[in-house]
Image 1: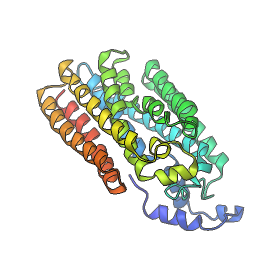
Image 2: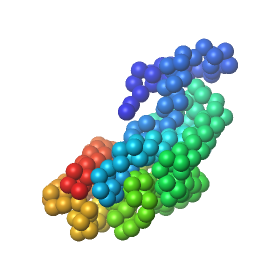
Image 3: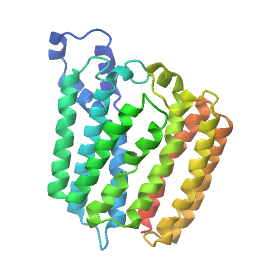
Image 4: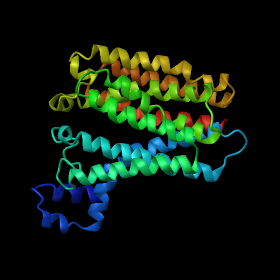
Length: 311
């Protein structure tokens, strides 16, 4: 999901300092687009799809479609709230980076207090919704994702490159949320799903950090490609985490919550992803990093989709 036409209008209105009358004249479509942008819709879509994959895999005897619907709504609200509060927290940093300075808060299109109220409301509604329509265990893990992402990962981004490792924990929780929503219990299987998403994030986010390392450096965000300019450690981590990922992707068949067709597909997809990682590690430039980013965005939904279809 990408805001195209509304984003152009947002950029146009952001070109000057918005006065109160100007805000009052903002069209409903532009205002809606601004609030939608705060929720990070593309990330939210990936989060919801990952949670639904976990729900389908965790459904013991057929899918409870109503509970699945409530899970999708609750997770979407939670992810949207986290995305909004993250943009509120980082609005000053976003203003320093070319790729983010036209977001609604650094551009001045929306007041910061509006985003804060909107984000808090979304997260509270999400937690109550999950508690009342799904189960308490899923709401608890949702709170863990919220608190670790906002209060541990986000402030660490300007302090240490270990922020990527810390941030991978809440980032890997969506399929686990889906599993607990379906079964209302834990087990080894949801932690396998967690492990897949946890390890996948490193080549994915190192690719992004390499592409935009000059902007991250300008904003004081200490991603690994920023703190070690020769990129050797980044290249090693890209390959290392991809290699660690591949055997973990075989465990769904070993644990018998997916089948042999998935296993064959996981091997093929893993080989292709490893090729992209090695190729990027050998040539750590912007174009190659973009290639790895695209490969990672294709890899995860294909892997989870095949796992669900063969479950």
